[in-house]
Each structure stands twice: as structure tokens, then as C-alpha cells.
Length: 207
Image 1 (spheres, rainbow, N blue to C red):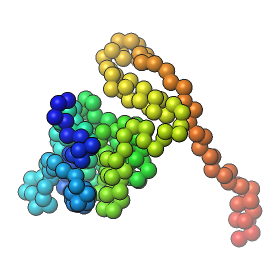
Image 2: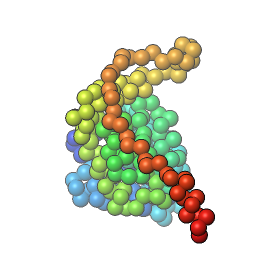
Image 3: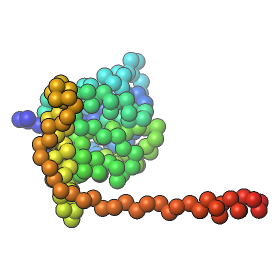
Image 4: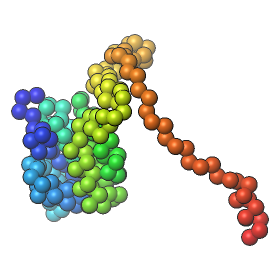
């Protein structure tokens, strides 16, 4: 892990295929204005004759996370899905796909994600910029200090995923070897109001 480029030092890795290129460029431009050092492994121009495919870029970016070269990465393709799947094949990569600022923030603060993927077909440039900053400016637990057990609960989840070995999991008859237990009662999500089907039917009959 020596020499890792960290978010504390405002260092980040980026990669995008041809579809994700415009969004990547908008995000990179803004990050540089904010003092970030951005390492871009491509695609670097819309005019490239043979732009690298999304999954190959995802694997290359994932490898740089796996090898401890970078703490965080931002990835871009058309949907965010393909490059995310590829990067996730590399060990130690915890990649999230998001399409909103709260989701991007929660990916880092709640799930300990170290890679964020987004799709240029669905995420506007300004949204991508705000999502990137929300992701890069947070560590696990940030913003949830008032929720007892939040950090410990999510840290345990990440630790178990990090330690996960499929061969051992299968050998153990698909029973996970827990690293511990944490008591955590997340806030209840309000259920949406129930639709009055009877009232709706009456309106339809009148019309």
C-alpha cells in the first residue's frame, strides 16, 4: 500500500469508454479546477481510431485499486453498468453505480465503496460533477455519526466482503463465516400512502 494516491491528497483515477467520455471530461475539468490531481487512463479523445472497450478499461482501473496504487476511482460508460461489472472482477474493488448525489454519497459513507461508476446516457454533466464530489469528499460513517452502530455495522459488512472467499464459502456449504455481530437499528422508512382503489374506481365510473 506504500505510495497509494489518496483522496486526502486529492488524487483520483478516472477511466471512460467512448460513451462515457463526455461526462468524464466535464468531471475531470471541474476536479482540476478544485485542485485535484487526476490520472486518466482513457479514453482520452473522441477522435481515437480504436477506443478501448468499456470492460477492458474497467479491468485496468480495477487493477490499480487492487494493487493499491489508488484509493478511489471514477469510471464512466454509457450506463455505468458495464464498466462497473468489469472493475468488480478485481479483488479489493468495491464499486458502486449511482445516478443521484445522495446515492453517490451513501456509496462512500455507508458501503465503503472505493470506485464510483456512472452512465453518461443518464447522468447530466453537472449532476456527475456533484456526484463525484459527494463520493470523493466522504469516508465510511461520514454524516451518520448520530446513528448509533451505523459505522460499526457497515464496516463489518465491508470487512466480511473483503475477506470473502468463494471456494471456502462453497466448502463450508454456503455458510458464511461471520467476523462478528453488530447491533444496529436503522431508521424506519416511511411507507408510501396506500392508494384508495375504491375511490379511484368511483371516479372512473363517473367519467
